[in-house]
Image (cartoon, helix red, strand yellow):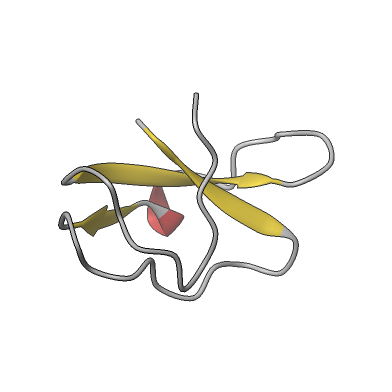
Length: 53
């Protein structure tokens, strides 16, 4: 799975979950974000990245 970080351009419209950078633990569905292709990823939790669900 590709990892994406806050401020990067989204390559594909979809729902993205937030995962911790070091242990890849899932932050939970309340932190899922729908991001459209071409938009920038929104701010994430500290030390987290986005992965498509």
